[in-house]
Image 1: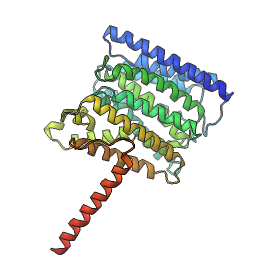
Image 2: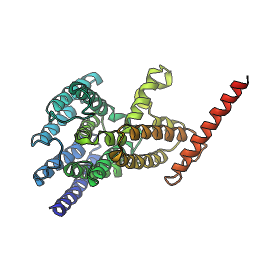
Image 3: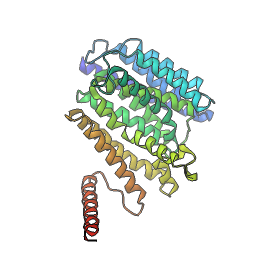
Image 4: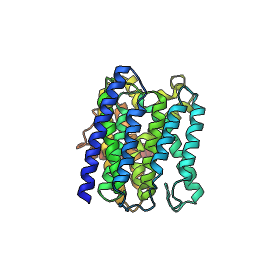
Length: 352
C-alpha cells in the first residue's frame, strides 16, 4: 500500500506541476495577476483527491475530517474574491472571520502551539499567527522569486517531516503537490519575473499555506513548523520595527523587509534569491533536527539567530556570503570574534 501511495502522490504532483505551469502561461498571455486559481485551487483540489485516495491512512494524532479540505478551499476562495480592491482592514476582517471559523472546527484535541497552554490561549495564539501569516504574504512579492521560495520551504519541510515520521503521510503528500505547484510558479517568478501577483491572490495563498502549517503543527510538529517559518516571521518583525521607528524612509511598510532593503543597497534580485534559497535549505534541516529535539524552543531560537546573522552578513556587502559548507565555520569565527571584542571592551572599562 505504501508503494502505491507514493506512486499516486508522485503522479498527482506531476499533474499539479503541469496544470499550474500551463495555467500560469495562460495568465501571462492574458497579462493577469489573478494567480490564486492556477496556484491555490490546483493545490487544494489535489489535496482533496489525495484525501480520498488514501482513506485508510490513520497516522494522525488528531484527525482530518472529510469536510475540512473543501471547507478551507471555499474560505480561501471567499478571501480571494472578497478582498479584491478592498482596504486592508476589511481584508483583515474577512480573513479573521474565516480563520476563526477554521480554528473552531479543528478537532478539540488539536493543539497548534502546545498542549501545556490553556485551550483558549492556544486557539488565540493560533488565530493571531494564522492571520498574520495570511496578511503578510504580499510582503514577499516585492522581490522576484521570494514568495514561491517561501511556499517551497514550507512544502519541502513538511514533506521531509512526513518522510522521517514526524508528520502524517497524508500531509506529506499534500506538501509534495504544493511543492510541485510552487515550483511551477518559481519558474515564471524568477528574476526577471514574467508574471506578477495581486494582493488578494496573496492573501488567499497565505491562508491556504497557513492551514497546512497549522494542521502539521497540531500533529506534534509545532517546533519544526516554527523553525521552517522563521524567515517569514523574522521579516514581518523587521517590517514592524522599521515602520514603528517613524523614519521617513520606512513609511511604506511593504518595502521594509531586509531583502528589499538589500536590493535598494545595490544587491541584485538574483543574488538575493540565491542567498535566501541557502537560508531556506538550512531551515528545512533545522526543522528536521527540531523534530528530535527534547527542548521544543532551542532549535527555533537557534534558527532565528541564524536568520538574523545571515542578513547581518548580507548587509555588510563588502563581505563575501559564505557557502553552505563554510557556514558553520564562519558562524563560530564570528561568535569568537564578538566574544573577544566584548571581553576587550570590558577590560578597558575596568582599567579606567
